[in-house]
Length: 371
Image 1 (cartoon, rainbow, N blue to C red):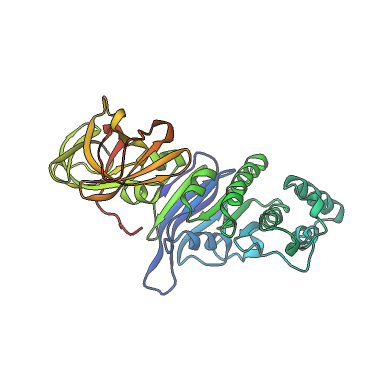
Image 2 (cartoon, helix red, strand yellow):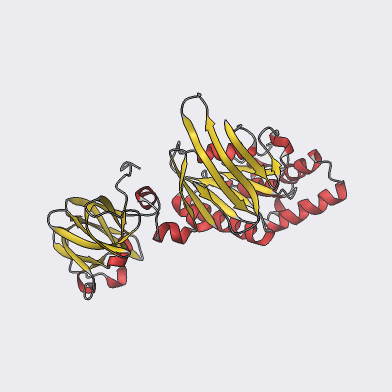
């Protein structure tokens, strides 16, 4: 699949394939351009090929076929230390016997940066990550979040053309992880960095990225802005993988322009926006986001209404997730703001559920349900 940025490309994968055993391709015919100053995340389940792409870009793996370019420079056989890339890993990879300051100075010394300039760069980056007062401490004297900041600073201090990040926040707790997501995003914006970021965390990818490339089985299923991935998934895999999603197997009954009528369950019908099914009678996977589903009092004027049974309430502070049984699916979720919730609803009660045609996507019928 080809995917291009509207910025001048800094990174290009051209027809790249990778196999480790000579038989099975873990990356298949990858064509991808990443623009100067862009933050692109490679997202996908384990074994989807995203980390292999990053390792090929870093130089730790070699493409089986195809070419990788940084600007106009072909990287295929160039060793990692000559690519001048910043790398941030999940395990920080800091030198434990060195102070924070010495860790940051190391990549500058390796590049023979004069001492006066190195001093300025180290001070500047320490101020940027707000760890100036910790310059003389060793990594084990820092919290996990502080160590991750130092690892990030070490990747940036020599001003690389490109920064690669491989699950860099995976070891942090939820609150600190969310804080670091914003810090990395802000550093990217302030410094004009080009970042290639690998994660399997959908919310992390949506929070931080200019574009996200969703991988499955060695192929980019869709590359797009976070909003488009969520609102306009290109296929059933992307809809299932990005965010929470309700699905029904159905069949196209009629087509009219960008919309169709779909039968599902036993005698139920819904309108839906056509995405990648164009034939009457074709099987389809319907996709409806939980926040687009409305309960009882809000049904007036909605295009579609079905009856369900409430199975469970899950309280999440500002909203409730209401799990229902609908058309044989007992995992159908509605997301309801607490302020809109009718407190007289009980588990086991019947409830009318509704949604607009424009909030349903009729997608291909090929998706691995276990993902």
